[in-house]
Length: 363
Image 1 (cartoon, rainbow, N blue to C red):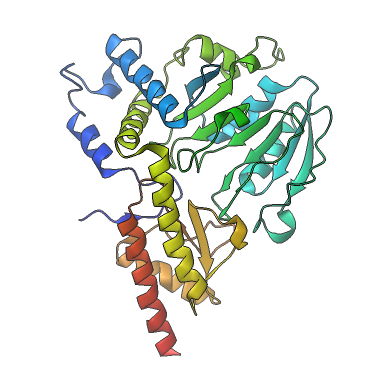
Image 2 (cartoon, helix red, strand yellow):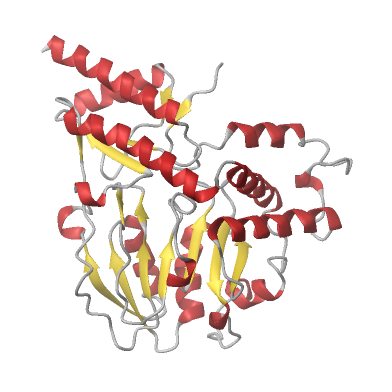
Protein backbone atom coordinates (compact mmCIF):
# COMPACT_ATOMS: atom_id res chain seq x y z
CA UNK A 1 0.00 0.00 0.00
CA UNK A 2 1.23 3.49 -0.84
CA UNK A 3 1.77 6.04 1.93
CA UNK A 4 -1.32 8.10 2.68
CA UNK A 5 -1.65 11.82 3.28
CA UNK A 6 -1.73 11.78 7.07
CA UNK A 7 -3.48 14.78 8.66
CA UNK A 8 -3.31 13.40 12.20
CA UNK A 9 -3.03 15.90 15.06
CA UNK A 10 -0.45 13.70 16.77
CA UNK A 11 1.34 11.40 16.64
CA UNK A 12 1.75 13.01 13.28
CA UNK A 13 3.48 12.77 9.92
CA UNK A 14 7.29 12.75 9.85
CA UNK A 15 9.54 13.70 6.89
CA UNK A 16 9.96 10.74 4.55
CA UNK A 17 13.69 11.45 4.27
CA UNK A 18 14.01 11.07 8.04
CA UNK A 19 12.06 7.81 8.07
CA UNK A 20 14.28 6.38 5.33
CA UNK A 21 17.46 7.25 7.23
CA UNK A 22 16.04 5.73 10.42
CA UNK A 23 15.11 2.59 8.48
CA UNK A 24 18.58 2.30 6.96
CA UNK A 25 20.18 2.64 10.40
CA UNK A 26 17.71 0.44 12.27
CA UNK A 27 19.99 -2.62 12.52
CA UNK A 28 23.38 -0.96 12.47
CA UNK A 29 23.93 2.67 13.43
CA UNK A 30 27.12 4.04 11.86
CA UNK A 31 28.94 0.68 12.03
CA UNK A 32 28.35 0.32 15.75
CA UNK A 33 26.94 -3.14 15.14
CA UNK A 34 23.66 -2.30 16.84
CA UNK A 35 20.60 -0.10 16.46
CA UNK A 36 20.13 3.11 18.44
CA UNK A 37 17.32 1.67 20.55
CA UNK A 38 19.67 -1.11 21.68
CA UNK A 39 22.65 0.96 22.78
CA UNK A 40 23.47 2.30 26.22
CA UNK A 41 22.55 5.92 26.84
CA UNK A 42 25.93 6.17 28.60
CA UNK A 43 27.91 5.10 25.53
CA UNK A 44 30.12 7.48 23.54
CA UNK A 45 28.08 6.78 20.41
CA UNK A 46 24.84 7.81 22.04
CA UNK A 47 26.42 10.75 23.85
CA UNK A 48 27.22 12.24 20.44
CA UNK A 49 23.63 11.65 19.24
CA UNK A 50 22.03 13.54 22.12
CA UNK A 51 24.61 16.34 22.11
CA UNK A 52 24.24 16.82 18.35
CA UNK A 53 20.47 16.95 18.74
CA UNK A 54 20.75 19.69 21.34
CA UNK A 55 23.27 21.66 19.29
CA UNK A 56 21.08 21.48 16.18
CA UNK A 57 17.97 22.57 18.07
CA UNK A 58 19.94 25.51 19.48
CA UNK A 59 20.86 26.53 15.92
CA UNK A 60 17.30 26.18 14.64
CA UNK A 61 15.78 28.28 17.42
CA UNK A 62 18.76 30.52 18.16
CA UNK A 63 18.62 29.46 21.81
CA UNK A 64 20.91 31.64 23.98
CA UNK A 65 23.60 30.13 26.18
CA UNK A 66 21.75 31.05 29.37
CA UNK A 67 18.97 28.59 28.51
CA UNK A 68 19.14 24.86 29.13
CA UNK A 69 17.71 22.35 26.67
CA UNK A 70 16.27 19.21 28.26
CA UNK A 71 15.03 15.99 26.65
CA UNK A 72 12.47 14.51 29.02
CA UNK A 73 9.50 12.15 29.11
CA UNK A 74 5.88 12.37 30.17
CA UNK A 75 4.57 14.65 27.43
CA UNK A 76 2.95 18.03 27.91
CA UNK A 77 0.72 16.61 30.61
CA UNK A 78 3.66 16.06 32.96
CA UNK A 79 4.83 19.61 32.28
CA UNK A 80 1.51 20.83 33.64
CA UNK A 81 2.86 19.67 37.03
CA UNK A 82 6.57 20.32 36.56
CA UNK A 83 6.06 23.99 35.72
CA UNK A 84 4.30 25.00 38.96
CA UNK A 85 6.43 22.70 41.13
CA UNK A 86 9.65 24.25 39.82
CA UNK A 87 8.62 27.88 39.33
CA UNK A 88 6.55 28.54 42.44
CA UNK A 89 7.80 31.18 44.86
CA UNK A 90 4.69 33.12 45.86
CA UNK A 91 2.51 30.13 44.95
CA UNK A 92 0.46 32.23 42.52
CA UNK A 93 0.31 31.88 38.74
CA UNK A 94 -1.73 33.46 35.93
CA UNK A 95 -3.18 31.34 33.14
CA UNK A 96 -4.62 32.44 29.82
CA UNK A 97 -7.11 29.72 28.95
CA UNK A 98 -7.62 29.36 25.20
CA UNK A 99 -8.32 25.65 24.85
CA UNK A 100 -8.45 22.23 26.41
CA UNK A 101 -4.71 21.96 27.12
CA UNK A 102 -4.43 25.34 28.86
CA UNK A 103 -7.57 24.41 30.79
CA UNK A 104 -6.01 21.15 31.93
CA UNK A 105 -2.72 22.87 32.73
CA UNK A 106 -4.52 25.36 34.97
CA UNK A 107 -6.43 22.59 36.72
CA UNK A 108 -3.22 20.67 37.40
CA UNK A 109 -1.36 23.75 38.64
CA UNK A 110 -4.21 24.48 41.04
CA UNK A 111 -3.14 21.41 43.02
CA UNK A 112 0.04 23.26 44.02
CA UNK A 113 -0.67 26.99 43.92
CA UNK A 114 -3.35 29.62 43.41
CA UNK A 115 -4.33 29.89 39.75
CA UNK A 116 -5.75 33.12 38.37
CA UNK A 117 -7.41 32.82 34.96
CA UNK A 118 -6.69 36.30 33.66
CA UNK A 119 -8.19 35.74 30.20
CA UNK A 120 -10.26 33.04 28.53
CA UNK A 121 -12.13 32.29 25.31
CA UNK A 122 -14.31 29.64 26.96
CA UNK A 123 -17.41 31.79 26.39
CA UNK A 124 -17.32 31.02 22.65
CA UNK A 125 -16.00 27.46 22.87
CA UNK A 126 -12.39 28.57 22.38
CA UNK A 127 -12.96 29.79 18.80
CA UNK A 128 -10.81 32.90 19.28
CA UNK A 129 -7.86 34.28 21.23
CA UNK A 130 -8.97 36.80 23.88
CA UNK A 131 -7.85 40.42 23.91
CA UNK A 132 -4.34 40.57 25.33
CA UNK A 133 -3.95 44.35 25.44
CA UNK A 134 -5.14 45.07 28.99
CA UNK A 135 -4.39 41.94 30.94
CA UNK A 136 -4.65 42.24 34.71
CA UNK A 137 -1.50 40.33 35.55
CA UNK A 138 -1.33 39.45 39.23
CA UNK A 139 1.41 41.47 40.97
CA UNK A 140 2.52 38.37 42.89
CA UNK A 141 2.33 35.92 39.96
CA UNK A 142 5.27 33.55 39.66
CA UNK A 143 4.62 33.20 35.92
CA UNK A 144 2.04 33.63 33.15
CA UNK A 145 1.09 30.49 31.20
CA UNK A 146 -0.14 30.18 27.61
CA UNK A 147 -0.71 27.34 25.16
CA UNK A 148 0.45 29.03 21.98
CA UNK A 149 -1.34 26.86 19.44
CA UNK A 150 -4.59 25.05 20.10
CA UNK A 151 -4.77 21.75 18.27
CA UNK A 152 -8.38 20.93 19.07
CA UNK A 153 -9.94 24.29 18.22
CA UNK A 154 -7.54 25.54 15.54
CA UNK A 155 -6.44 28.86 17.03
CA UNK A 156 -3.04 30.41 17.64
CA UNK A 157 -1.48 33.38 19.40
CA UNK A 158 -0.33 35.81 16.71
CA UNK A 159 1.20 38.04 19.38
CA UNK A 160 2.49 37.43 22.87
CA UNK A 161 0.74 38.83 25.94
CA UNK A 162 2.19 41.70 27.91
CA UNK A 163 3.03 39.96 31.17
CA UNK A 164 4.05 43.14 33.04
CA UNK A 165 7.52 41.73 33.51
CA UNK A 166 6.39 38.34 34.80
CA UNK A 167 7.97 35.18 33.39
CA UNK A 168 6.13 33.78 30.36
CA UNK A 169 5.72 30.00 30.07
CA UNK A 170 4.52 28.55 26.77
CA UNK A 171 3.24 25.15 25.74
CA UNK A 172 4.54 24.93 22.16
CA UNK A 173 3.75 21.26 21.63
CA UNK A 174 2.02 21.85 18.30
CA UNK A 175 3.82 24.91 16.91
CA UNK A 176 7.47 24.60 17.91
CA UNK A 177 9.75 25.01 14.86
CA UNK A 178 6.79 26.06 12.70
CA UNK A 179 7.68 29.76 12.70
CA UNK A 180 10.47 31.90 14.18
CA UNK A 181 10.19 32.78 17.87
CA UNK A 182 12.45 34.91 20.05
CA UNK A 183 13.33 32.48 22.84
CA UNK A 184 14.35 35.35 25.11
CA UNK A 185 10.68 36.40 25.33
CA UNK A 186 10.02 33.22 27.29
CA UNK A 187 11.19 31.96 30.64
CA UNK A 188 10.28 28.39 29.75
CA UNK A 189 9.09 26.59 26.62
CA UNK A 190 7.98 22.99 26.53
CA UNK A 191 6.81 20.77 23.70
CA UNK A 192 5.75 17.20 23.28
CA UNK A 193 7.62 15.95 20.22
CA UNK A 194 4.84 13.97 18.57
CA UNK A 195 3.32 16.79 16.53
CA UNK A 196 6.11 18.76 14.89
CA UNK A 197 9.41 17.12 15.87
CA UNK A 198 9.52 13.36 16.28
CA UNK A 199 7.94 10.27 17.81
CA UNK A 200 5.69 10.30 20.85
CA UNK A 201 7.54 9.77 24.11
CA UNK A 202 10.01 12.66 23.99
CA UNK A 203 9.38 16.07 25.55
CA UNK A 204 11.60 19.09 25.01
CA UNK A 205 12.02 21.79 27.64
CA UNK A 206 13.87 25.05 27.06
CA UNK A 207 14.37 26.81 30.38
CA UNK A 208 16.25 29.93 31.47
CA UNK A 209 19.07 28.91 33.79
CA UNK A 210 18.13 31.24 36.67
CA UNK A 211 14.92 29.24 37.10
CA UNK A 212 16.83 26.05 37.93
CA UNK A 213 16.77 25.56 41.69
CA UNK A 214 17.14 22.97 44.42
CA UNK A 215 14.67 24.92 46.53
CA UNK A 216 11.63 22.85 45.61
CA UNK A 217 8.73 21.66 47.76
CA UNK A 218 9.75 18.60 49.73
CA UNK A 219 6.89 16.68 48.14
CA UNK A 220 8.25 17.32 44.63
CA UNK A 221 9.49 14.00 43.20
CA UNK A 222 13.15 13.93 42.23
CA UNK A 223 12.23 13.12 38.62
CA UNK A 224 10.17 16.34 38.40
CA UNK A 225 13.10 18.66 39.16
CA UNK A 226 14.36 20.56 36.12
CA UNK A 227 17.69 21.14 37.85
CA UNK A 228 18.27 17.42 38.36
CA UNK A 229 17.88 16.82 34.63
CA UNK A 230 19.87 19.92 33.66
CA UNK A 231 22.78 18.99 35.92
CA UNK A 232 22.93 15.55 34.30
CA UNK A 233 22.49 16.78 30.70
CA UNK A 234 19.16 14.93 30.37
CA UNK A 235 20.84 11.67 31.40
CA UNK A 236 19.79 11.47 35.04
CA UNK A 237 17.89 8.32 34.11
CA UNK A 238 17.46 6.46 30.83
CA UNK A 239 15.97 9.02 28.45
CA UNK A 240 13.74 8.16 25.45
CA UNK A 241 16.86 7.31 23.45
CA UNK A 242 15.33 6.35 20.12
CA UNK A 243 12.87 9.23 20.16
CA UNK A 244 15.69 11.72 20.77
CA UNK A 245 17.65 10.14 17.92
CA UNK A 246 14.73 10.65 15.50
CA UNK A 247 14.23 14.21 16.78
CA UNK A 248 17.90 14.79 15.97
CA UNK A 249 17.35 13.51 12.43
CA UNK A 250 14.44 15.92 12.04
CA UNK A 251 16.59 18.81 13.27
CA UNK A 252 19.27 17.99 10.69
CA UNK A 253 16.59 17.71 8.02
CA UNK A 254 15.24 21.17 8.90
CA UNK A 255 18.72 22.72 8.93
CA UNK A 256 19.40 21.25 5.50
CA UNK A 257 16.15 22.66 4.14
CA UNK A 258 16.30 26.30 5.13
CA UNK A 259 15.61 26.11 8.85
CA UNK A 260 12.61 27.53 10.67
CA UNK A 261 12.36 30.55 8.37
CA UNK A 262 11.81 28.32 5.33
CA UNK A 263 9.37 26.12 7.24
CA UNK A 264 7.37 29.24 8.12
CA UNK A 265 7.08 30.21 4.45
CA UNK A 266 5.87 26.72 3.55
CA UNK A 267 3.46 26.65 6.47
CA UNK A 268 1.96 29.98 5.40
CA UNK A 269 1.57 28.66 1.86
CA UNK A 270 -0.15 25.49 3.05
CA UNK A 271 -2.47 27.27 5.46
CA UNK A 272 -3.40 29.92 2.91
CA UNK A 273 -4.27 27.26 0.33
CA UNK A 274 -6.70 25.61 2.72
CA UNK A 275 -8.16 28.75 4.28
CA UNK A 276 -8.66 30.39 0.87
CA UNK A 277 -10.66 27.36 -0.21
CA UNK A 278 -12.75 27.42 2.97
CA UNK A 279 -13.45 31.15 2.61
CA UNK A 280 -14.83 30.61 -0.88
CA UNK A 281 -16.60 27.32 -0.31
CA UNK A 282 -20.38 26.91 -0.48
CA UNK A 283 -20.27 23.71 1.57
CA UNK A 284 -17.40 23.95 4.05
CA UNK A 285 -16.65 26.71 6.53
CA UNK A 286 -13.93 27.43 9.05
CA UNK A 287 -14.80 27.40 12.74
CA UNK A 288 -12.54 30.05 14.30
CA UNK A 289 -11.99 33.80 14.10
CA UNK A 290 -9.94 34.58 10.99
CA UNK A 291 -7.40 36.71 12.84
CA UNK A 292 -6.61 33.83 15.19
CA UNK A 293 -6.37 30.96 12.72
CA UNK A 294 -3.76 28.30 13.40
CA UNK A 295 -1.11 27.50 10.81
CA UNK A 296 -0.87 23.96 12.12
CA UNK A 297 -4.45 22.77 12.73
CA UNK A 298 -7.23 23.82 10.38
CA UNK A 299 -10.73 23.11 11.71
CA UNK A 300 -13.84 23.16 9.51
CA UNK A 301 -17.39 21.84 9.23
CA UNK A 302 -20.40 21.60 6.97
CA UNK A 303 -23.96 22.34 8.12
CA UNK A 304 -24.71 18.62 8.37
CA UNK A 305 -23.25 15.97 10.68
CA UNK A 306 -24.22 13.40 8.09
CA UNK A 307 -22.19 15.19 5.41
CA UNK A 308 -19.28 15.63 7.84
CA UNK A 309 -19.21 11.87 8.45
CA UNK A 310 -19.52 11.13 4.76
CA UNK A 311 -16.65 13.48 3.96
CA UNK A 312 -14.32 11.83 6.47
CA UNK A 313 -15.24 8.37 5.22
CA UNK A 314 -14.75 9.19 1.54
CA UNK A 315 -11.54 11.13 2.22
CA UNK A 316 -10.13 8.14 4.08
CA UNK A 317 -10.96 5.87 1.16
CA UNK A 318 -9.11 8.31 -1.11
CA UNK A 319 -5.94 8.17 1.03
CA UNK A 320 -6.55 11.40 2.99
CA UNK A 321 -6.64 10.10 6.54
CA UNK A 322 -7.20 11.32 10.11
CA UNK A 323 -9.42 14.26 9.14
CA UNK A 324 -12.07 13.66 11.78
CA UNK A 325 -12.25 16.50 14.30
CA UNK A 326 -11.52 16.01 17.98
CA UNK A 327 -14.35 14.17 19.71
CA UNK A 328 -15.09 17.22 21.89
CA UNK A 329 -15.90 19.50 18.93
CA UNK A 330 -16.70 17.21 15.99
CA UNK A 331 -16.43 18.35 12.39
CA UNK A 332 -13.11 18.04 10.61
CA UNK A 333 -9.51 18.97 11.33
CA UNK A 334 -6.53 18.95 9.00
CA UNK A 335 -3.22 19.08 10.86
CA UNK A 336 -0.59 20.41 8.48
CA UNK A 337 2.62 20.35 10.47
CA UNK A 338 6.09 21.00 9.06
CA UNK A 339 6.37 17.48 7.63
CA UNK A 340 3.14 17.73 5.61
CA UNK A 341 4.20 18.61 2.06
CA UNK A 342 2.43 21.32 0.07
CA UNK A 343 1.36 18.52 -2.29
CA UNK A 344 -0.63 16.92 0.53
CA UNK A 345 -2.61 20.12 1.13
CA UNK A 346 -3.20 20.52 -2.60
CA UNK A 347 -4.52 16.97 -2.72
CA UNK A 348 -6.87 17.75 0.18
CA UNK A 349 -8.15 20.96 -1.42
CA UNK A 350 -8.77 19.16 -4.71
CA UNK A 351 -10.67 16.39 -2.95
CA UNK A 352 -12.73 18.93 -1.00
CA UNK A 353 -13.60 20.74 -4.23
CA UNK A 354 -14.66 17.52 -5.94
CA UNK A 355 -16.67 16.45 -2.89
CA UNK A 356 -18.39 19.84 -2.69
CA UNK A 357 -19.45 19.78 -6.32
CA UNK A 358 -20.78 16.25 -5.94
CA UNK A 359 -22.82 17.06 -2.83
CA UNK A 360 -24.23 20.31 -4.22
CA UNK A 361 -25.24 18.57 -7.46
CA UNK A 362 -27.16 16.01 -5.42
CA UNK A 363 -29.29 18.63 -3.71
